[in-house]
Length: 512
Image 1 (cartoon, rainbow, N blue to C red):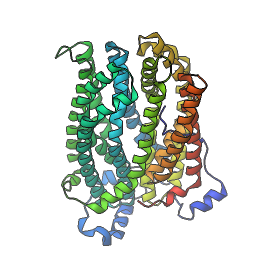
Image 2 (image 1 turned 60 degrees about the vertical axis):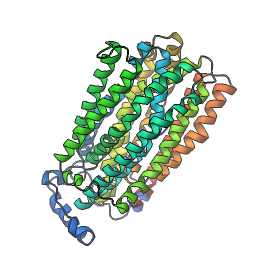
Image 3 (image 1 turned 90 degrees about the vertical axis):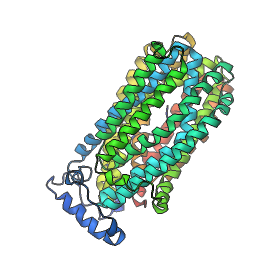
Image 4 (image 1 turned 120 degrees about the vertical axis):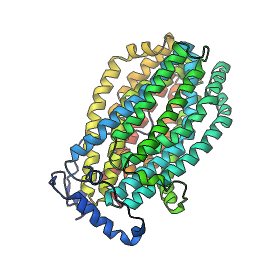
């Protein structure tokens, strides 16, 4: 279960204390007339920004300026952002599951190696993810405020910064990743297979940097459908490649684990090319002409928001490796590692839709804060949280009931199946809390409030999850069940903390 998730609060914020805290600026609600002249409002705001960037002003098409994240019904805005992101995140999760399922044809060691190697790669992806958080917060805020020049400037500098990071990180992953593998597996076979996988998969970081930031920029201006097109191209190529190279042993016989790695790299490379083409055909086209022009002021803004997110994700990645270390010390360690990998992939089918809601609410909150509609931003957070929590309760119940059947599909090893089924049942109980945590953390990050989520995540991973995992699994000899229980508890605590932060309204004061 993702340690960055938190908990739920399916209720509206209507108390007098909260109303006074938000202040007199909360003048617009979701029932505002759809006939409001949004173009005029945004043009007026652009005029007020003239002293800041008048020489750079460019105009976006009227149909983009009329996007309903700021104007019109709030539920309409949530729907328009959520459904493409829901499909995107589920599709992405399916790719991860296919990687693990296909690797089962090569044995449990290959399954464990794929999971461990991809977690190592995730460490290097943290910098790119952090840039995307800064992209969403800045671009959505500026777009909501009607500042077109800053919208394009933020997009261009994000693409430039991520491209540089992606190239450097790929080189680091290719040269250094193999040294991490022996730290987390005693099995020479797992280490050997993992090293082979990483020697190819490390190149994935270069095109991924383009795909990631492009998606964040499109979301920030309220366009989730273009990102969906990019993701579906990536997913289809990746899945076809997995089955052709491993199951069908084509076009090059004997690729084995390398076939899975090649499929991921090629799929993301094609997606990156498509992403650049779609930017060229979009309202963000003018940002491409600014790529290559170093703008330290904007890059500092991006990094100031993104750095806490990077620390947060680093803490999560560190906790993942610590869990691998703990699982190395339980009986049947290889099966335990494989079940951890499978369990997270299967659970991803549940929490990836929640990630869609998190990404959707992030853009909605950012744009509405830019438009000075704090009340609408607050209500968006609670509305999406309630929706996500209800869905996660249903999905969690299904996962609990079908744990044995799901585990049997994902592995042929009896011990791995047993550990995986236990993982699914224990974590199913905490799924509603996971939904609350993920959505509210997305809302906070959309506002640029990345420091508090960072503190919450570090506390729940370092102080709650890891010590409790060791105590239950090793000291009390509960084995894998002890680790799974600690995971569920840490997610619940994180959810409570995020709920309290969002309820306070302090995040609205964050400067981006």
